[in-house]
Each structure stands twice: as structure tokens, then as C-alpha cells.
Length: 413
Ligand code: ADP
Ligand code: ASP
Ligand code: MG
Image 1 (cartoon, rainbow, N blue to C red):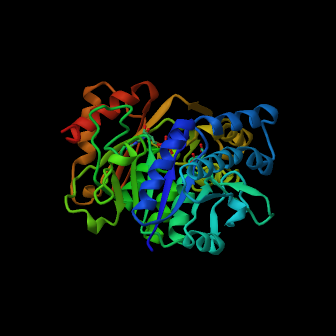
Image 2: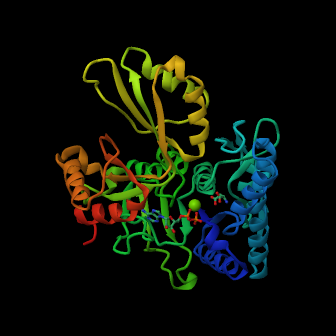
Image 3: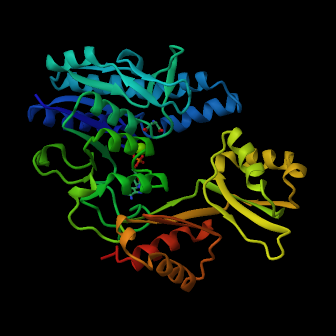
């Protein structure tokens, strides 16, 4: 029998009526003949509250205890959904990460999945039992609970789908698919029927939080057909043959290739600028090696060529959560690096234009720059790759920039 993985995010399991609604979605797929594994997130808001408590009690906390606390939200929903299924006559049991076991590396707080040893679970599924799995969690080599980073239930679901050789991994959420941009910001955003793994990876990395980045990486590597869809569609009115949603798939499967597929934004980055840095060999290394040793990811980098080859400016972005640490790392090495002034801002946003069609089209970036200029939006930094352009702007202009670019590339129509 074919296997199916169904993942439900926080808003889809936010209260008891919604958990009952999820049970009806599961019932439909069981009736259609699938062996079903369900992956659940914590109820909406719960993980934030748990993280808040950890930070309140210990700002610099033991990551293993952080995991013990924040993994608990998913334990609750897995038990509740198993009960909801039993109440409507479906054989089901809950599985915690350690019970499967889903093995991770030792990076508590943002662990990577290393193996899903799910033979006992497969056996139960073959006997007709629905597996209800607590997402976001696994067991680390130290035999303690590990969590997979925020949004990690998506990655749990894809990893389990790969381990089960599932026909599909359905990601149920509060929107009915992946849109040309965040529908919460632009009401004219359109649902995409299909998105390539590569574009989805860029969209997720650049801020579209609809899927965790690692889940897309894993789906791409393992070839898992991932389908984003809504849990708010009426469970009994859905056709199992042609459901509404977005399929994340190989580029070859996409017939109509547009130049620009989507616009993403992120307010999770901060800007740092070193003023009057000595313009000599080794300076970039003296800035970026200590940051990397401190585990701080640097994203956009802009360096000018100096006029008189004496000093120059160096601007880059880091995750907002690492902003204070990054400042300290640099200030501590001020003499060694040789700069005059460190400036920074957390009030910035990165807006990105994504599309595989950009490989073969010139002038895409120029169009973005003129459109933003017409709206009086100042550009602080730019980076590009084969299939994306990212622009750093002042945060208050984020929505305007997203809407402007969405319209410029014809995504409104
Ligand atoms: P869940 O709790 O189900 O995991 P998330 O909040 O993580 O749900 O992801 C769904 C949200 O992602 C949507 O409500 C939407 O606001 C946001 N989002 C951002 N960019 C996009 C996009 N391009 N397409 C669809 N949703 C997007
Ligand atoms: N509950 C976790 C979070 O809020 C994992 C998830 O929802 O995917 O980050
Ligand atoms: Mg999510």
C-alpha cells in the first residue's frame, strides 16, 4: 500500500476543534487507502511561549535544557491528535522523536537529522495504525532530546517521507499553497501551482517562512514530492485526485517558466558598516574569520574600491539575533583590523526577487532598481546570484518595496 505523510503546522492544530478537523483530513486519506504518518507542530504560540520562559530564566542557557523545554509542545499535540483519531474510530498512536528513533547530530537547538530508524513504526503502519509523530524533535548522540530549529516540523515531515518512501509529503498550513509573495503583505499575490526545488530553496532562505529551509534542501536531495496545501479547506469536500495546493518539484516538471517567480523579504538581518578600514591585503580575513569563529553567519557583503588606496568602507549583514555579539567581536579587534568607526542598524530589511528565468534574461535587476527609485526607496546594499537579486533597504519601506516589485514583474496579473 502507498504511504503518505501529512504535516500540520501550529495554526492547523491551534485548538481542540482544529485538532478534530485535522483528524477528519487524516480519516479521508486513510479511507482513500493510504498508510498514513502524520507529523504535528506545537499549538500556535506555544513554542514562542516556551522559548520565552527559557530566556527569562536563563538568557545564556544550556541548549540541552532548552530542547527539553521547547520540544514539549509537539508532545502535547501528538497525543491529542492520536486521541482525536481514536475517538472517530481510527487506530492511531503517538511517536516522540526518541521513540522512532529519529537521530540527530549533537547541535542542540538547531540539530540536523542524521537517520530515521523507523522499522517498528513501519510495521505498525502496515497493520493499519496511523503514526502521529511529534515534529521538530529527535534524539542526539548524548541520548537527550534535540530540536531542529524554528519551523523544524517541516523538516521532520520531509525526512520521514523519505525514510518511508512515501508517495508524497503534504504540508498543511494556513494558506493554500506557495504564493508569489507573502499573501499577508500583498493581497494580489497569486498561488503557484508548481515551484522548482531550487526556487523554493531561495524563497525559503530569503525569508518566505512557509517552509523551513532545511526541509526544502532535504526534499531536493531525496527527491521528495512536497505539496503545500491548506488545512482550512473542508476535509470532506476535497478531491483526493486533484487537491488544490503547490507542488515543489524538479524544474523539468514545470512547463511555463517565468522570469520572476516570487518576491521574498526578511526583517531578520542587521547591517554593520566598518568606516575607513585600511585598504590592504588580509583585511577581509581579519574581519570575517573572527565572525565565523564566533559562529556568526555573514550574508550580504559590499566593499568599495578606495579612491586613494588607503582606506575604504566595508558593509555587511548578520542575523539580527547575532548583532550585539558581532559588534563586540569587531570592537574587541578594532586595533588589529584597523578601522575608524563601526556603524550599524537593525532597522533594515532584505527584499529579494527570485526566478530561474533570470538565468536567461538580462535587465531584471535594472528594472528593480528603477522601480524602487521611483518610489523614493534608498538601496543600502545589493547582492545577486544566478536566480535571485537581494536588496537591503530601510525596514519601514519593506511592504512598499515588496508590492512595487510584485507589480513591476507582472505578478499581480
Ligand atoms: P505553519 O504554522 O503551518 O508551519 P507558517 O506560519 O510557518 O505555518 O507558514 C505559513 C505562513 O507563511 C503563511 O501564513 C504566510 O503568511 C507565510 N508566507 C510567507 N511567504 C509566503 C509565500 N510566498 N507563500 C505562502 N505563504 C507565505
Ligand atoms: N513548533 C516549532 C516552531 O514553532 C516547530 C514548527 O512549528 O515547525 O518553531
Ligand atoms: Mg512553519
